[in-house]
Amino acid sequence: MSSAASPGSPSPEAPSNNPSAFLSQITGAKVSVKLNSGVEYRGDLQCVDGYMNIALEQTEEYVEGELKNKYGDVFVRGNNVLYIGVE
Amino acid sequence: MADVTTADQLDDSVVSEPLDLVRLSLSERVFVKLKGDREIRGTLHGYDSHCNLVLSEVEETVYVMDDDSDVLKTIKKQSEMLFVRGDAVVLISPPQRT
Amino acid sequence: MATSQLLPLELVDKCVGSRIWVVMKTDREFSGTLLGFDDFVNMVLSDVTEYDALGNQTHLSKILLNGNNICMLIPGGEPSGENGATEE
Image (tube, rainbow over the protein chains, first blue to last red):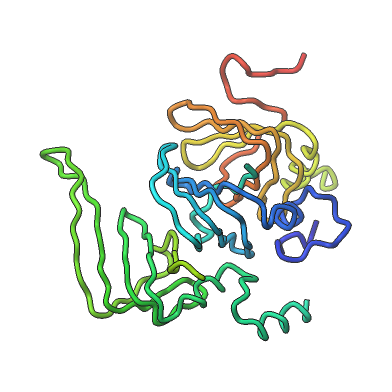
């Protein structure tokens, strides 16, 4: 509980319920990242750091549910992130 | 932990943290989305952990709603060299890697 | 007296495993089952419903919610309206 703020290094047998364990569990999976602006990015999660900066691969950009753009790789600055969800 | 760091330093094409994507884009053309409906394309010369950026040969596109006609206007500006403050950055997209 | 204080994060910890209602600083709300959280109150939620400013609902199976923009957490709650689940 006291050392939970390091998403990169969960203990191996930690229950898959705290944020860092969840992140390591979904790394490599297809995720959707919603920003506070409402814009959504769907792609393969490469990694996340402690600021919730996110690297995505094969990314699609959705604005109001409509596909607007595609990017190979995307770096998203963490302060804009509302949530990371599994598809 | 130490092993991971060493491995990454040996293979500098590995993306083990999100900012590695930005590092791999140094001296490449990048697309940057900023707060306030602004977009920038330019050559990335430098960055730091705040996502402050230095770009050259920049084309900036600003999207503004024209008050009178309710039409979305785009304004384009060119700059030779530009500093971008990190807190304005929403996303950075490098060119396609092969 | 002094021993009876309930720390804010203890309240959150008591909610692990049960439904929770999250109100964001912006006009956005979430309800879901709290699976876990960290010191920043970033939260892992499952079986989530997202309510945006217009009242649109979106279902999400499992998310990591950024704690940065959270305003309030309401244990056991559901957003107001027809499905407001008050226990008897």
